[in-house]
Length: 78
Length: 334
Image 1 (cartoon, each protein chain N blue to C red):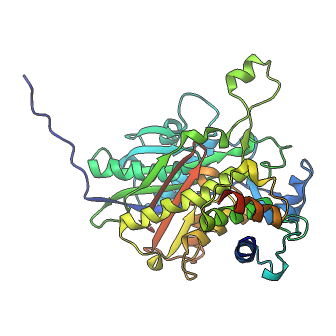
Image 2 (image 1 turned 180 degrees about the vertical axis):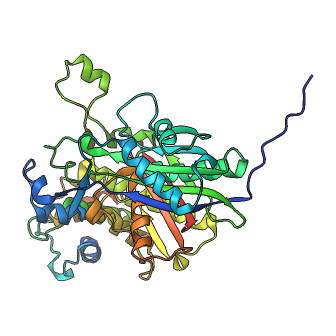
């Protein structure tokens, strides 16, 4: 399940910010490792909401520091 | 006894006859911006796509800029100002509660027969004005309408706010609307969401400023991520509604002219709309900044004057901003 979300998230991050799919790993920080800024992060979040039918409020977005954080949040709230 | 009242009779349709813009002389570079905010040219370009913007002179008012743009638009349209029935001014930076900027502008351009009023619909103000003007022409309340989008946002930003100072700028754009045998302004898709009043607002009201002893002058403030999410998620759907209502396919567009809020919003909107690659997209923000109500007519004028888009072509316009408010329509370019 988590692997599926991770793979899906990697595709989204690639489409939004051009980051190679293979670079999107659980331990990677969106900001520090993948160079995803706040506006790109909003786009990633919106695409994830559409794909997995979850709600990720703005107040929650800042807690999603790593790819793994996002995968866990989506898995728990799906 | 109820007496029969003769109704007004308007034109079959309205159209945009001409567009003109006014860009103030002073160019403010990102380097100059960074003298007051902790930022860099690279950061500003990455986050907004803005390379430089224009600021009006200290003694140059909203009405002064509007007069130049409106007079030029009338001249381009070949319409005598005395035939203008309404002057609509979309602005949120005219610094008087009353009288309106529109009355001043109507007088100064020689629109001696015109009614005049300001529209407070922020960055959607120009598209609101197009719909209102078109309706006035179709009901017979006016033969010709001047719609001006004008802002002097440099007066209302906190120059030390690193999240907004670099975005906003000054300028004016105007169109002349008139009667048309063919439909040339599509049905509007518009609305408001006062539930997000705080997304873009002032730091305080002028009354609070007065009562506080005038320490912190009211300035624009914005929740950038919230606005971005709304623009890309909700507003993009409004653009699709306008296309559908007009019976126009995105593939048939000659131009997409969204409010120049931020290049990143424009890019994300283009992706969300799945706009075909061959449709030219307004990116006037790079050298103009975000001029709120003025941004759509300024971009339209620039794209037409450089030949990037064709006269008589079909354009999708969409304005969105503080309120929150939004409006979109398909138009035939002048």
